[in-house]
Every structure is written in structure tokens, then in C-alpha cells.
Length: 342
Image (cartoon, rainbow, N blue to C red):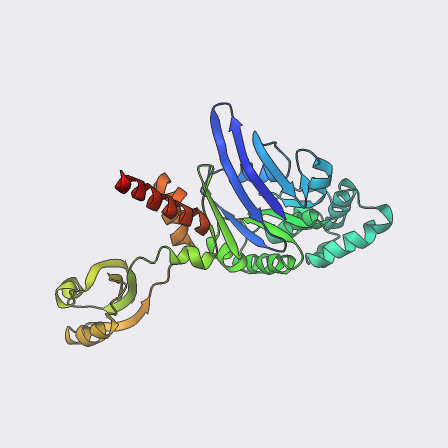
């Protein structure tokens, strides 16, 4: 378990991180998101003990990383971004070196190195020099370094950056498998990856938490309109008149023109109105051929963009827990009652 309590980091007059509070539960994979410069790397560096917080406490598996750094760091396996590896070593030599750094007992070292190489799928390349490996295998070597010593907590910073789709799928499956036996904090810019792998997501912006919830709940918060995606062939350009035919339509937007002559539109209407039946009735009469009609699904990317573009006051309100929101409502009621009594 990771507990971050009232963490602040200042560099002179600049505050990189402002009073962060969150917990990563045992056996949980928590997605850690934020735009560039949001404070993600600073926060992860504080959790790993690489830099010290200006204020607050970080507890890793019961150990305060400022007061008991050796015990706390022993619980952590860190895979940094950009794969910093010793290129002149073989895969096995690198994993052995990491075992020495982490003070794995001599009699247990060979078994531990074998276990990690097997776990990360590196058995077939263990004798190869790291510099001769593909980017995907280098990512696996970096993850192997984090796994040595079997730490309870894994911090993975952009583990799939620069990989091809097949390699991304392989690393993603490995992370899911590791999540069965480890607590994982996963930072990534690939939001679809976070949505598929993580049970909860924490979004940080300008050093503050703006949201922490499940991917499904965050996606649900951006469903303000009923949006359809419509692909049609419209030779007479009648789509521009569709709002006159169906007044329930709020907006029609041309998204792209395809090479086969079809056009893709998004059509928004009130959430309580289903206009699909009317579209099927009216479009053929206007000589518009429907190729595809589907409901647009809100994504974690939509939620992410919506949250980081939201005014700060609203962000603070949305990041509050339900009990905090209820307390605020009760306070408003009491204040209103006092005013009425006066």
C-alpha cells in the first residue's frame, strides 16, 4: 500500500506539487495521469525517495520513506521512463547486477534472477547484449530490474512508450499479470491503456488532484449530450438542412470526408431524445444513403481533456469525495437557516 499524506514540493517560490492526498490500495493498479508539467514525475520521485517532499508524509507498506528510507525503498520496484540501461551488459548480467544492488542474498540470487527473467519473457534473449535488443525487449529488461527482489510496490513510468501495437499488448498483459501480486502505480500518456488496465485513475493538473475515480465514472461525467456518429453518402448536400427537418437536433458537425465519397458527421441532441428513428425515416427521402449510424461513446481521453480544461474552482469541487460534498450541502443548509432566522 502507498499512502500520500499532504505532500507539497516547493522549488524556491514555485510549488510543483500542492497538498496531495491519495492512497494506492494493496493489489490495486492505479493509473496516474496529467499533462506535461503537472507534477507527475515530481510525485513519483518523492514516492520512490529520490527527492524529499517539502511538507507531508509518504508511507510505503507501513514505512515512512523520510524516517525509514531503507525499509520503505526495499518495498519499491521502479521502472523509470526512457529505459536507462547499461547497454554493454547482457540481459542476464544486468538482472544479476540489479540483484546485487538490491542486496538479494547470495544463495537466493540465481533463483531470483531466473524467476525474473522467466516472468518478463526474457529467457530467449538473456545472453544478448542489451544494446542489440529491440525497444520492446529493452522495456522488458527495465521492468525486470524493477521486479528483482520481489518488491510489493511497482511504480511504472510510461512502460509502453515508443512500442509497436504488438509490444504494447504484451507489456499490457504483463502489467495485468503483475497486478495480481503487486500494488502498481502506472503513469502513461496512452489513455486507452490506462482505461483497460487500471481499476482507478488519479488525474493531476498544476500540482493538484483534479479527479480520482474509476475510468467508467470519469467517462460518465462527460456524457452531457446524446451524440450520434453518422456516415452517409450525400451527393445533393442535403445534410445541411437536417436541423430544419429534425428540430430536436442541437448541432451537426462534419468530422471527415472519406476517400470513398462518404462523409462522417456527429449529431448532438438532448440526452432524453432518441432521434435515430427519425433519421432512418427522413434521410432516404432526401436521397441520403446511410452507411453507418452509432452512438458516440465517451472515453477516458474526453474526461481527461474536460477535467484539465475545467476552471480550478470546479476541479476542486469535482475532486471531492461524496462525504465532503454532503458536508458542504449541510453547511449551506445551516447557513441559509441562520440567515432566515436573522
